[in-house]
Image: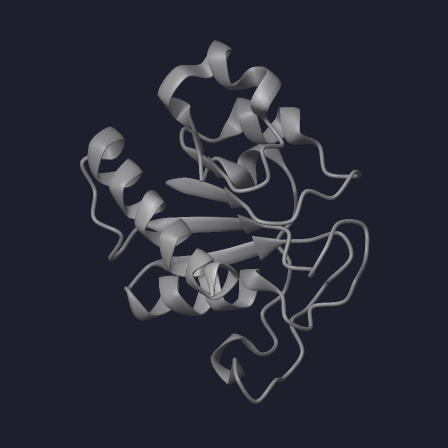
Length: 144
């Protein structure tokens, strides 16, 4: 039951942080999801919480994108048909800086997290990936 409620909790943490730090609503905000695979360092998206989170964000009016080095494109699924054929965006400072916030959902080892911290003004960390950096960056990194 806790696991099924987590996507909604993550979206609410993001909405609150956007409101507090950027004075923006979730509706119309650009959100980058880092990692859509079910677990780190694999390409399996079955039962991935990222898909539910992305669907909830889309329903709230957020403009979503994702990056995952193991998942170049989201395949067609019955449950998340609206996400089908979305392609992973490049992991460049220029691309990352286009988003109002980023959500770390799957903490793959081969993602340059320093680039994310340097390029994004608000990061919601669902995996505690940035814990050692959190004190240095204050409110920019929010644990979910």
